Image 1: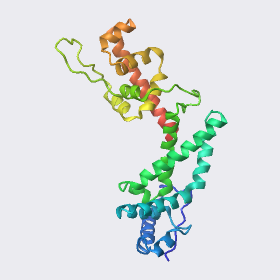
Image 2: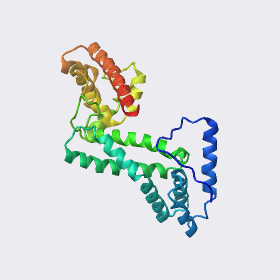
Image 3: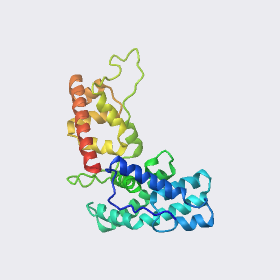
Image 4: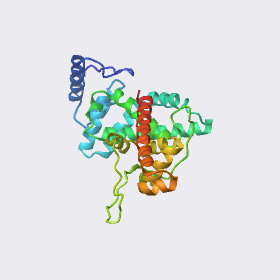
Length: 276
């Protein structure tokens, strides 16, 4: 039996190239030394506590390639078993910082557990995500942060500690807001399509999670929030927005530019807070 490699919780990808290559080679050697897939000896071998999670990930993907549903489920149960204690500790730790009642916290813990393992399964079933076969714990930490952020946004809990809660918004309205306004040009439309100079900001806004974007818009200063909601949510033209707010067309354009700048800065600050 090949000597197993211990994978400490604090392992990171900050190792040098030589150590990285050595680790990949060891993992490949462990996988190659396993008995033939689905044999009794194979199942006995992968159930030892020392088996690296990277090797289990590769075994799970092998089971999927063989279209062995029972097999990959069995392997995923082993992965859950190996990570359950650490993940439970993480869930308790991160949700202690959320300002909710104890009953709400218990419900959030259940949801966060379920979401984490749902996302974990999707990641492990994706053969394109090869890094899970090289450094499982590093990938898992990033997956946790992503799942945690999505849960808070979905539940309407603002991750900025100065804003404890925010309103829930129907998803269909979020979708409308997240789309840059598209109009057919008409002969009688003297205004045409609105020209926004800050293309980089537009790209960033389209790239973020829908719920993230709307929550950020709702925390803009009132005069900027009103312009953004009228233009991107209600689909009004620049001239219509100006008439509703009693301001000039130029002021509408200026406020949109400022709003996009503020949103971009907020997004950067939020990503730094969540992803470090």
